[in-house]
Image (cartoon, rainbow, N blue to C red; front, top):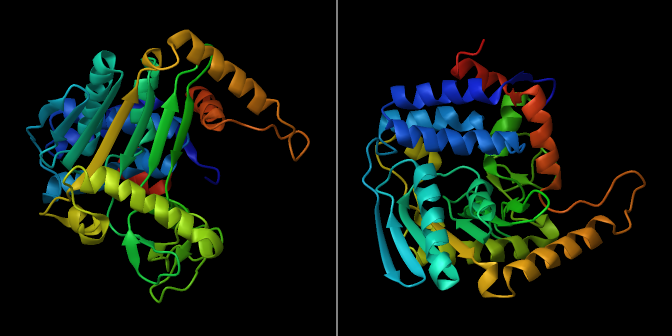
Length: 344
């Protein structure tokens, strides 16, 4: 962000909680949603942090999210289960599914839980981290409504379909991957609009399917890899659709209603998620895994850098450094979100 105003996490959490409860969310569901938003903002994932509070409030107000859902979990085998999120806020459902996956993994070595009838859950990495904090390797997948062209395509087909993964590190912060299978998340386009900034090249397409740098003209995204290598991003998006939507009984991307339709209500999306937890103790062994992670990360971080003074980083290193900075100096908030949260 360009010279943003910064606020303490506690103040932002209080403001977001108040907005969600006023819109009709249960206190506990609002708290879990705020927990996810603040964690995303701490890590520097501004596109999926507190700036989304207005979107969730709109969905609660207009019927795109059920205010008082009754979530139902069913264990289907020793290592598997499924959760019906009952069209409530996606964040509490995602945290619950993660905890169920960890519980299953404690007994079976691996736990996999699918979620259907969910809604947008923000940043997948926050759920992956919850498993890593408990010593488990985790994988988190979610599909979304069509916003990304196929390789060589001119209309949206897949969602941004993020992949998140985390692994515990004994003497440091968890290894953390959180990436869209599109060039960028569409929420980042909206953030660029709010900040009146041009988009990077080869990330977005306009109404006619032509590349654009104008965030206001962007209508959908290119897959990861852009014009030359977008087939890789499109294939990964398809993998996520299969594992998080088709496997869960959620709506595949091309038939899911749009986020704009959900925001205006009254029909919720049927988003699918999949959470998988692995217990290292049941594979190589906990101690061997911890030693292996330390050796791997030491080799990675001491690998020769292409540019002097710019170290090679593991996934998550920049996010943890940003979190430390934001814990000290506050979380930056864009002007639109500032106004919505009555911070000005």
